[in-house]
Image (cartoon, rainbow over all chains, first blue to last red):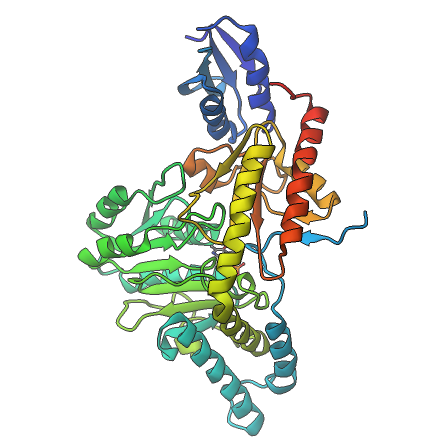
Length: 75
Length: 383
Ligand SMILES: Cc1ncc(COP(=O)(O)O)c(C=O)c1O
């Protein structure tokens, strides 16, 4: 389960990635942040951002709130 | 703004080759009649059409009667896919294709699936290169009628292992269709294909001319309502002046292709290196070595692709983007998606015979400031 959720539904790329990037330095290392994003680009861009920034992409889930992407702060 | 505009979107449409312009103007006077008729004017038109076909066949390394001129690269691709499937319907109804085909091929595949057929997409790696193991498995499956592989990606430039893919198809008797729109007139064509398509405005010919080549012995059946013209492969009268211009410019482009490819590949190398070094948080995508000579793609983190296109346009640079932030489409480029690379802030730069070193230098000089400006505006600096 995620430790916190950021709701980026209705936002177009690159806003969900920017929201994740803004939040990450504010949470303790190890925290899992879930990004809710219905823009299809998020499915590509959130994992790509994790790769570029050395954060851990845990995977995506498609729940009642729509597509969601879990990221763990690793550093 | 005083500097002249710099056009860097040849992969969409290259500026018309001077030879194409000349041939087009001459053929407007000489080639307006219907080549199918029996009077003098028609015979002249027929001679022009035959000569255009001979010249094109020679460049492609095929027989003249294997080549048909279509109304666009898109209709050629539709015909290649649907005709290749129709011709082999006794053997099966599966289309195998790479995940990075042009939308023309994917839309034909959707039509096939809508009519009850099957389509199987084969993945690519992070560099945009076909997964050959998955491809071999896919074409080996029972009921495969046709396989489709782009010769080189129109979005990221990665050259595909066509010879190896063709060998896997040959092993199991599946014909291979190659979409060679970005290769014809620029680089040597791979061997082993049964059906090939291309598009004249990619090599400096006029827009609205496609090529469909079907090798002898290929089971291919026209998916269109019957029409005798162009060996029955594509209906309707050809736009003869445009076809004449396409053939003339193809010959001219092919004659210079090796030298041009070397010149443009050096400029693309420079773009790849300088963009990576001078624009922070950028991902230059596609294979750095096994790639088209004239095309390079990169994505800028946190930047809206449409805003970037407009900012570049205001400074006189015309480029293309695979980002979905562009309002014309809701989905990111399926090619970038298949590769798993950043899709927003995406720019494709593609060069042509009129592109100078100074053009590329000006682009490289201005780009970092333009990207930095957009990031500052969006408040994402330092993220
Ligand atoms: C690889 C590829 N295939 C097909 C096409 C379609 O060609 P046309 O623009 O002539 O319809 C294009 C151009 O958009 C292309 O790049």
